[in-house]
Image (tube, rainbow, N blue to C red; front, side):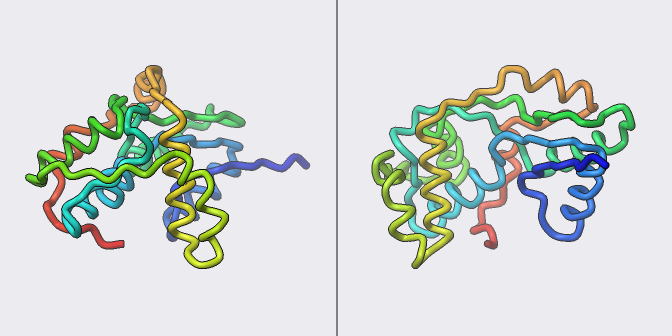
Length: 187
């Protein structure tokens, strides 16, 4: 008997567990790019609304591709509806390849922020996580995520092929930000 393994990034709660089990059974790995919901709502907008400052990892020039969690969920549902998709890795991305600096500018404009930014150096993000992990696991994870984001430029020019294949129309980062509410997201 062969064993299927899958990594579903961001699958949480009861729905996430059901989706993960079904994808595992099909031997499918769904690999989304960076979640807009995390980068915009939690890492940028919350800092602006709570403290008037945006945190930027590194110099902010690294480019990433962003996709909304809702769009990833639509990918998962559509992948599950296709019996021909087995033993496959499915990359899920959106139309927005953008740097952290440009992303921060969009969020600041939406929230009417002054544009104050705090940059965390790549060296700090590399060395700090093992030191703080025993005291603050979440902070250590954010520094690890920030280090990756600052030191890897990961645009995804081929996002459209899988979007069309699975009938998903991911929204742009601009559309996501335009629909944002001007309140601190719950954590």
